[in-house]
Length: 300
Image (tube, rainbow, N blue to C red):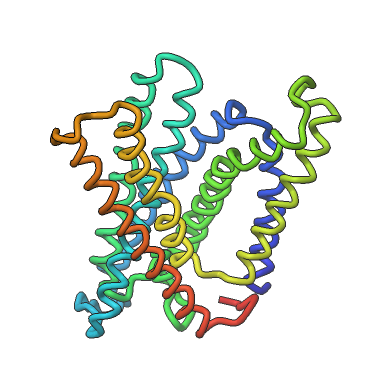
C-alpha cells in the first residue's frame, strides 16, 4: 500500500474521533494520550539505546553541515519546533480556565505538562542523537529501519512503538481540532438544543468531517511533517506563548513605563516576534526545499 493510502485510513479514523462533541468529553482521551506519550517515548529511547549498541548500528557523525546558511535556518526551524512541543501547555491552560479556581488549576496543569514534555522530549532527543548523530531523522523511528529493510530493533517492538505513535497523534489531533470545531458549531449549531439532538449532530458531522477530509488531503499531498511542525510553531506558538501574553499584560495591568517589568515584557514581545518571523521564513524555506525532492502524493 502507498503512503497516501495509510494517510487516508488514518484520516477516516480521525473523522470518527472528531465527532466527540466537547472538550469535557475529551478528558478520557487526554488521559489515554498521556499514557501513550510516556509509552512511545520510553520505547523510542530504549530503541535508540539498543540500536546504538547493536552490531549493525550505522557510523555516528556528530559534525554539523558545512553550509552556514543551513546552520542559521536550521536553528530558527529548531526553535519553532521546540515552541510547538512546549506549546502543548496551552491545552491544559485552556481547560483549566473553564471552572474556578483558575490560577491553581492553570499552574498545576502547566507544571505537569512541562514535566512530561521535558521527560519525553529530551529523553528521545538525547538518545536519538547519541545513536544516530546528524543522520537522526525527524521521526527517530525511521532510523530503526536500514536501507536493506532490516531493523535495528525487533520488528514487533517497532510495530508496537509505531502503534503508540499513531494512537497518540490521533488523540492529540482530536484535542487540537476542538477549538476549531467549537467555532464552526458556534456558527452553524443551535445552542438552545441538546448537543446530541439531530439539529446539532448534522452540522457537527458535516463540518467536522469536511475539515478532516481537507486536512487528510493536504497531509497526503505534502508529507513534510518536520517542516510543517516548524511552521506551526513559528506562526502559532511563538507569538501565542510569548509575544501575545507580554503585550496583553502591559495593556491590562499598565505597569509604569519607567519600571523594569514594562520593558521586560516589551523586550520579550519584540524578541519572540522577531523569532516568529525568522522561524516562519526558515520553515517555509524548508518546505520549499522538501518540495524539490518530493512529488504530490509521494510514497515516502
